[in-house]
Length: 527
Image 1 (tube, rainbow, N blue to C red):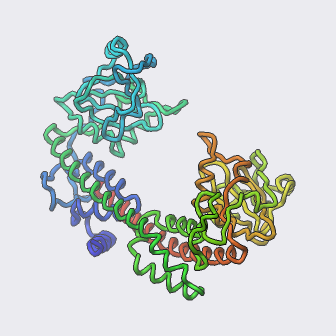
Image 2 (cartoon, rainbow, N blue to C red):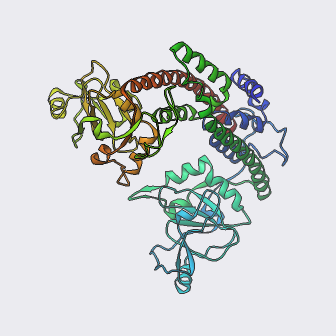
């Protein structure tokens, strides 16, 4: 498989026409790249709607992809949605009264990607349902599409099922079966072009909304019915191939995740940087397949921090001590659980105001400027002398202090202030200074570990912008060894993180190359 992908990659990059690639080979190449399976699915649908699969037989195993320059022009007419439907409408606009049992009331949440799920619905009475059905009575073969909310554009074909009532958030499209099949309509609506037209017509109000009149004006290609069926069958085959490849990728990812702990077992025994480098080289060599999986480096980093927090990353770690049962789990001998407030001398929240930034001044650190273990202070916005003085009035951050994101999507990330930098807090950040007898880098890395992150997430409040209160942060459980062990753990963690950062940079470069190739191929077969 690897050799074939290399051959395909070299062939395409050297300018060989795409007609030399089979559809299956193209899919295999695209899915080898990050986010490749969704890109392959999009390419298949785009290709189908442009006639790129119209001359293929149902088996299609040896069919090659016609390139953008050598494929004959498609002669299919274009038609508006309204002209090929018997009915285009939506559900009840006034929310009907609910009852405990009766006729299911279907909303946007029940329309999944390609299927209906009515396991969780409210109900209306028979009398209310009959009134609603005067406007919209769904039946087998109708196409439902979400038309209100974040999932606008999600579609499915109705199977044979019990009667139900629709609400305003779901539209009903009933194909004129003498012109168009429901499957062809769904193929179009789920395709990149269909989704583009859907969202081009959406009105952004309190929530996204696609009105029926805009829906009716959408335009789709319309081959003969028999051709529609042949193409849909071919698309189904290719989508099944994508599903199979995705399942294999998921299985490989699961196996890689399970083997992460085992692969790390050799690292704690390294006594010197040279020993660690050798152990790491062995791990890279013996588990090289692991690194090709998207997100595995991040998973590895989390595992390192989890082992560090559990006292299992260094050779000093031992068996669990039943006497350390105050916190989230048993610790190894010599460790104890302490609240974060017992380790810190200062907790300072940011000013709850947005700083005015300019071209010169002092870095004002936001959540976007923090990654686990590192402040990206050079990219931070700058504030002038007056604002800086106000924002550090309670406590000026100094080298080794910890800055922690406590609100928003990037919640729960900690980094230490580097030497020689004068900076202040922006919004959504807080400042922690640990006691002199505690290693601040150790506390910082533990704050980034899964054991503390799970506490932060468990304490979040607010639905639109999750946040952790200062009083909850002070009560975080922190696993703490004696000072020498803290310093030893910091050394091991930072060596491993440095190796992972180097590896990540190499992988990013490889992924960028592979992604550009996949995008070019997908564009060629879908053009």
